[in-house]
Image (cartoon, rainbow over all chains, first blue to last red; front, side):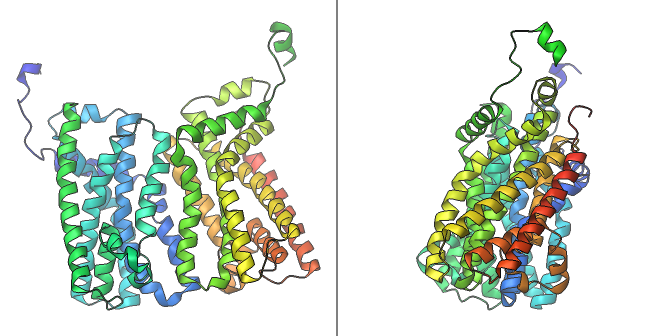
Length: 254
Length: 260
């Protein structure tokens, strides 16, 4: 095909399903990485199980949200690896696939494969906490929102790296600081009162606070609830739109 | 080596390997500050979480656990460096061809990674002194010496485990998961962040096969965190040395230097 024969512009989200399933096949061969994705949650659940078994329900809900949050770390690693090590993103993006389909296909493929440990955590949570259908659906919606946020963060961050060896350090720093320090694995009430608004503005802890409030573990004021819901919705939407914009812009090389 | 000496008489066949690796370690963290911040922060993140969910009396024990866990994680770093240099940079062939032996190479990488861990260990030592004084278990000179000795044994043991595994890793994508899984699971199985008695019986039995368990019990005993008689402490020390010696011998047999 001659260059002049190429279509002038690519349809939005073109090639999404094809790249999503490609990514599913790639990720499905990464059994070790899949096991590693559960390490921090596993460690914290062990801590809670041994030292404070009464908090196991809170920790399990937190582990579900944290697991979807750390999928962003996988997106970061994969996007950087494909670009830096394989230099394959140029090949993918030179084809008819759109940049946003590349980002969403990668994030979606990772989600499909890494959903298994989340489902196991969900089953454990249902056994320990006895969730109602409404509570279960709320946790599902919160986890999905956190995933959209973290996948967007992961993809945007991946474009800044020039060296694969440094990625894990920054990625581990970001996802642990925002996923473990704030009240995700422990009750919101244990977090210092002065810093609670900050925690409600961080998507993983905002989602955890809403989930804990729905389970009756934490009492949130109307203002706190609005801050958590509003912050989570606005931040996720804005970041997702920015990730789409950034995916298109980085392809153009502006 | 004799042939090399006769062919290239001007090329030095001895040198200062450890200072060279020290510079490698320092350059790495000075160019990537997050690399040194991450191992400092991770034990603190765990400690912060533990301080929220566990009784304050356990804090000195948890800090000791964080120090031993940090030192154990050097294994993961050694694995990462050694495997990256071999697979990505193809540097190991050059080291094999040089006068550097495999043991000095192991100590060199272990030493360069120790540099990145020292800030974390220094801060945790200060925190241990503070928390110990508050909880009635002060950091004595004897306790400190036992702590340093145990950290030294774990440094040698886990660095050799790291380099032994690294020589068997085939692709770069395996490096991070293999290191993380191996060393985190080993750390969690040992009673680092909780007393041995708090573990379920079967778990206690498994933990007794791990050298880190005896390092933890020895330091806890020396600092008075978990009561232990002099005889018990000698017993823990002997078991630690035995487990470490067995571990080093096994991993050095696993370790492929020039032939792989």
